[in-house]
Image (cartoon, rainbow, N blue to C red; front, side):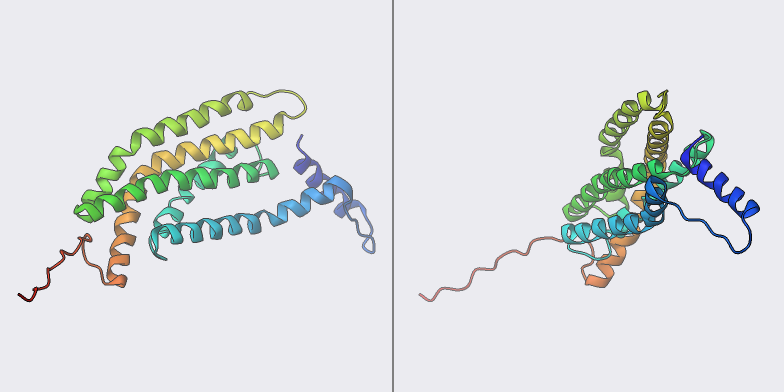
Length: 221
């Protein structure tokens, strides 16, 4: 039985048994656990904002980073589905794994978007640049992602007093990584085409950027 189940069971008993003019309050580690759970959304949101501003500085655009950020929910979906299928609950360990996974999923998306930007600047069309980036970056993404999942396999089979925590963080992270890779290689190129086209429309730069040739000035004889 996890601590989350114990907390919910104690709350149900308190509601049923305590008189109307009585209340209860948590102390110690349980109070800290409940407070940390309430702050997880704030921490996750701050991580997203931090990643967004880093990408905005890297791409020199406030539009193109959305191609990376909007691909992250593909992995978040896998986290909750895998935890649900494994019979686990959304506890603090799952939330820690979710924050860790945010950076890893963003890294995979950055690999595709960065290469697609380079191909676009080299003269390819939007669709051709996106397809080339997804095809050429698929192998390194698969290698790093599968190595990450393989490293989590011992934690998935953990036993003993800390088994719930180890299994929660490993199952959630592995499921999120697998779904993020499986869906991301199809979604990220589409997002790049959409947001790169919007970026070019807003900035006024149509098509790939080509350097201007210097015109020599006439020299008086």
